[in-house]
Length: 223
Image (tube, helix red, strand yellow):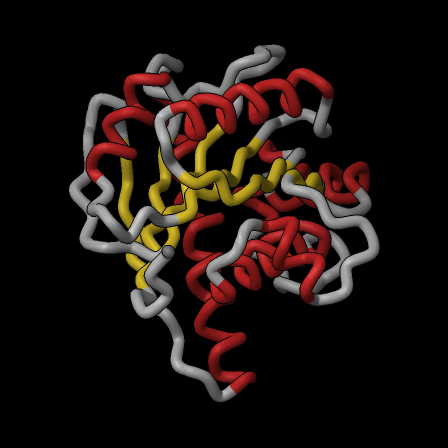
């Protein structure tokens, strides 16, 4: 039986270490921004509901060769980019194996994925996350579900905008669903069902609102 007394959520931000250094650095900045948004949302919803917030610890993996030693998390959130036009996540199986083995037993936490992609969510991205789910389950770990966030090339500008503004709202709402699941210590589809979502699933896709206008604002911002 899962131990729900532990209220520690570990968020691991990562990049594709095989990418060019400038690309990998941008990916890591975006992963950090998503992780901070998740942590801020956990704290905000705890204040609003007058409940004790779980401890959220942010960590980084600059290469997948790192094997973090984490202390009894209730949930583990992996934040990473997806390789373009690939049916596999950029998370190597050996990295997943190292991460799974680093998790203390018998707590056996849920592992959620937050994947970023420059393009709008496509079938290849869905296949990549399905393959990641398979790897995690084959290693005996608990799959918690995934977010697939498209339009990541705009995220550095996006995260300067209001969290519930028209552009950022779809991404914020997706993160909020993950916060709900992690707070309930449940898989994403079960958590969505418990809050009355009409079409629960274990993969949520989102991209910024009004993308053409966002690109226009981004171009003006950087002039």
